[in-house]
Structures are given as C-alpha cells and as structure tokens.
Image (cartoon, rainbow, N blue to C red):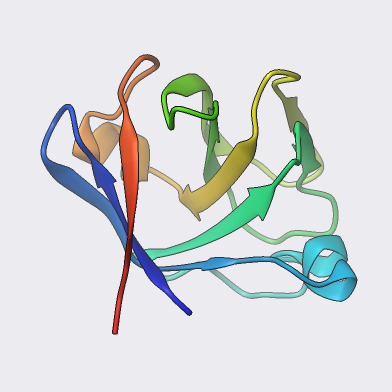
Length: 117
C-alpha cells in the first residue's frame, strides 16, 4: 500500500507515493543500492529512532515524527555515509533531498498519511 504525505500546517504535499519499509530486509536495505530517489516518493520506517545513509549514492531529507505526527526533528540533504537520529520519534520518513525546503516543512508541523488507491 502507498500513502500520500501531507503537511497539514502548510497544506503542502511531501510525497505522492510513500511506502512503509516493513520487512527486515526492506528495513535493512532501505535506499541502499538505488541510484536516486524520485521526486514524490518517500520511505517510512516505524520505530526507527536513528537511520544511516551508508552505501547510498545520493542525499536525502529526513523527518522524525512523534505519535501525534508532529515533526520533532529534520535533516535536510543528508549526504551519504552519515547518521541521523531522534530518540523520541515513532516514525521516520526519508524523502528526496530539498523536499523539506520546497514544501516549507519545519519542526512543529503536523503530517498526515492518506492511503492511496
């Protein structure tokens, strides 16, 4: 299943095609080995208070959110071979680089996940 990610505070769309990394392998590999992340896509991790960009070939934006879907912490254009974390987060969203600045998404904003058909 895919989801649309909306910034409820700004009325902007962060991703049209977001999916959860659910299996152990999906969580382990994430975006490793990919050449890029297309605009409008996102990868969502449950209970992942930290992520890494080891073995990735491109930068990504990261959003950590709490149980109320409020943004706790962001990383913009995090390059390869880096760590990012937020211990209080319940969901972590990986987005194409520059998505946060283009949508004016910031700490304190609230996100919404809408299932797509």
